[in-house]
Length: 251
Image 1 (tube, rainbow, N blue to C red):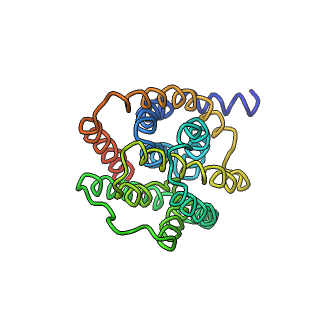
Image 2 (cartoon, rainbow, N blue to C red; image 1 turned 120 degrees about the vertical axis):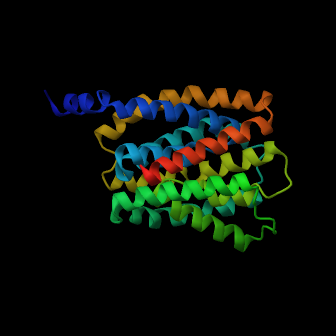
C-alpha cells in the first residue's frame, strides 16, 4: 500500500470525518444565511477533532473557496469605505498571527479557541455591540486584531462581527460587509500554512470530502435568509456557537 492509499485509509476510516461532515453542514447553512459562521463553528470543532495545526488549515482553505462563492453577490451592497481598511489591516496582520499557530502548544491553542468562541457566543446572546463611530484608525485597529486571530486560530470574525453589527444598516448590508471582509483576507490566510507544510495530503483529502458538503449547505442558508425571520435564526445560531466553543474548551 503506497503512502497516498495509506493516508486515504487513515482519513476516510476515521469516525471524526463524519463528525466534521455534520459540523460543516451546519456551518455552511449559517454562513449562507448570515455571512459568517464558518470559522467560529469549524475552528473549535476541527481543532478538537484533529488538533489546531491539522484542523485550522482545512478550515482556511474551505473559507477561501466559500468566500469566492459568495463574494459576487455582496460586492454591490458592501460598504467599501469601512470594509477595505478592515480587510487590508487584517491581511497584513494575518502572517504574524500564523507564527502563533506554528509555535504555541496545540492543546493550549485548542482551549483558547474554544474559550474565545464561547465568550463570543455569550456576547452575541447578551446583545452587546460596539456603538461608537467607525473612524479609519479604529477600522485599522479592529482589522489588525482580526488578522492576528485569523492567522493563529482561523477566526477573524468575532471582533469584526461585533464591530460591524453595531451599525444601523439593514441586515442585507451587514451580511454583504461581512462577506466582503472575509474574502479580502481569505487568500492571505492560506499562504503561510501552505508554505509551512501544514497543507499536507490528509488535509487535502479531508477538504475533498468536506468542501462539497459546504458547497451544498451555503446556498441553502442563502435561500433561508430570504424566508426565515432573524428572531428564529438567532437562537439556533447562538446555541451552535456555545456548543462548539464548549466542546473545544472542555473536550
